[in-house]
Image 1: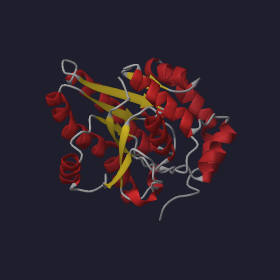
Image 2: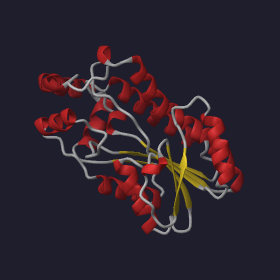
Image 3: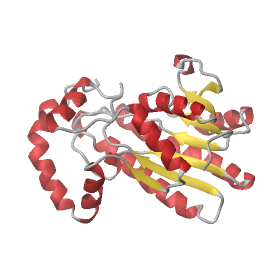
Length: 260
């Protein structure tokens, strides 16, 4: 996929990875339309437009219609938006569960539903979904987040196969732990305690763009996380045992930042 002279709609462009993607895409010669619930937080960049879009809204479909009418040249979408809560399931408010389902999964499905017919009619287009290692490995304290990311991975795989005889590209990229403001300090401390490597947002953005440029169907980031994804798929009991050993450490940090 060429990036130069393309117009990408970027969802989640005000977050850590999203901001890095804005810069990387701009340097690659792409035009970027950043959609956010609070677009005023975006630093002005040449070739970048900002629009308001609430991914958790019930009228998301109508918002997308207005957006694509305003920007008919959009020929690629990068869904990089996401929410998470690090807490045991019983300590997660229903509102937090609903928000993660709406933003992480439902919005991706509605965005694809809106744009894939347009891209197919145009004869080209790309749908890029930014998932997570937790979309392949269930992790304690992230039950809802894992459910949404497992769902996103399955959705993108099914959609790619559904559109396999069309010119529409569907790409899934799964980062590991990333150092962004979305992580509360308890999560940063947990990653340090477990010895987990946290990637910088610009490094993740670079990997996403490489996957796009090489027309990869899927890309998993980080080692040994990529290995654990494979092991969890064929021998999940091995990962069960590893997680059980980590559970006392995880419980030290779990629920320290629970929403009320």
